[in-house]
Length: 108
Image (tube, rainbow, N blue to C red; front, side, top):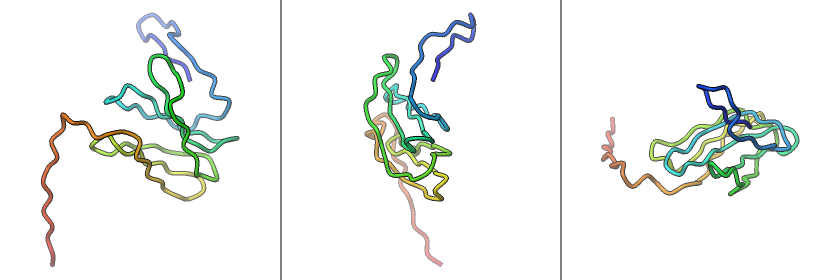
């Protein structure tokens, strides 16, 4: 994974993940990057930015991670894998600055 200065074209930082990177997701609340991997580990890794230190490894997929998405409150990561599973990972605390909208249940 490499971070680039788009104005100068200079590489700011990089990390060798030792596996195929298939998806990336940025957590703006915590300044952390979530990477989804394929061969050989089929896992998610959370990296602290800008130090790029590994803060967590999340395992469970049996094939590569194809897609990552963040919940509206920024607390949960959804991963979709080539193993035809969706997994929900409670990775972060909800953003305290976002108001929780009340929900209304309607029945037919």
